[in-house]
Image 1: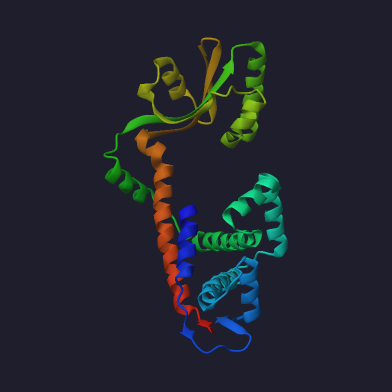
Image 2: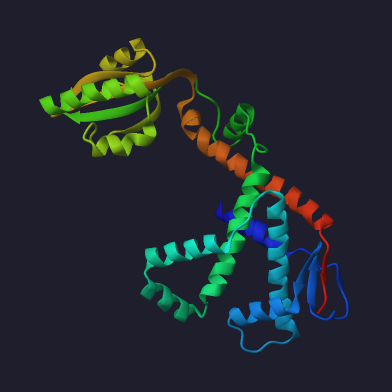
Length: 299
């Protein structure tokens, strides 16, 4: 997402000014139907910490305002706005997280003031949310695309009987056995909630070494576990299997015939393909924005 933010920011900064004319009294620029007044520009320059201003500096900071104005106009059309109160809250959280002393020290070191940081937050908020709206439902990666990418970059598929497992480990004692029975009831009632793994570990249902194993070939497992998993139904906890002073269970999430490496890499591959498509979609959207935007600079 970070590269996407930079991409959007640079595209906006490349938007051309439609014309350069004589200075209209009180008007610094016009963006579509919105006016940026000279007083706004002077305030922006002053609050940015600039002590001496000339035409070159004025045009540099006016470009920032025209770019932001264009973002704001597009945001409004999509129902995306950021208020002063929202920026105040972001600033409050930022200072509380980093401490006022550290923030003041860093500002002094870099020569950047809080106004410039807030200005950046405003740009970032609009960029991120506009991007999300543009890309929503527009980027879909098919299984065929994922498979083609894998064949091109990793090699041929190897067809095997696979199982998608989550490894559950508990101590071999009565207390843990009681908890695993409760855990089974939770799974039966609510289904498998992998996102709650940390909570299960915290509550003592699982030991910290419990983890998602992804897709594994049945041939790579010992015969006892392989047979138990093979005969198990989906969404079922198989075990226990004693190993030292610990008991192992395997939660069976899925069974397929396929390539384990591909299946374990599929999400990563789809994300790479999606990122590539994101740039294409955003580029097309910003090209349309350039063609339709009217920016007249009056300096």
